[in-house]
Amino acid sequence: MKNFITKNRLISFLAILFLFIIWKLVSLYAGSEQLIPSPEKTILAVFDVVSRENFWPALITTIGRGLIGFSISLVLAILIGIPAGIYTTIRLLINPVLITFRSTPIISLILLAIILLGNEMVPVFIAILTMFPIMCTNIIDGIRKVDPDLIEMGTTFQISKERIIREIYLPSISPFLTSGISNALGFGWRAIIIGEVIAQPEFGVGTQMQNAQIFLQVSELIAWTLIAILVSSVFEALVRLVEKKLVRWK
Image (cartoon, rainbow, N blue to C red; front, top):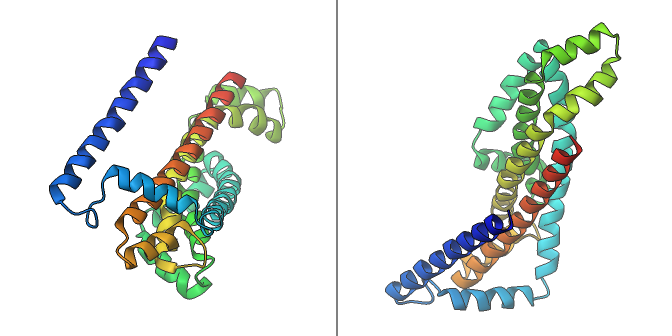
């Protein structure tokens, strides 16, 4: 197992190294650090960005928006997804709403949110509309795939509905929930930054990206992008860690 893990890490490292080599070659071919900065210049830009006074306020604000949006989305997904998975009528009522949220272009939602809510609340609103349908759909799918024999047995022995949900439904949907959370965080994180780029709140990673684009600071724009990818990877790793804990618990 240890050798397998080491091999996987080596392959991942080689893949990242290959991408950096391609990046370097493209930068050399372009012949302009202003147009396509080299990897080393971009890494220096990352250190420069991190050392600025506005770095932590921007990063913490964006993460805070993401956590608020995620928390609200998760609570709504559980409160709506579990009944929708159990009762067909509720599922039929909520399904058109979920389809609408998933199908509507993010840019339309952002522009509407700017009009209704103002710039500061747009990223949180977009996070909720992006993450909620993903997690809710996964919870519904997980509920519907619960072994019906277990439910029938619980009903036969007159076990309360609350206990059936707690001891049968919740453990069964945990893989679906963690998968939904992982996907929701990925899409939600990008949606939040897009919302910040367009809405331009006072603080935010997306705001800093837009400022870098306005002044044609390509290396700084890529630096903020790398930081956003790193933060997203950290949250992805945390979700995977929680998933492993749930698997052991089951």
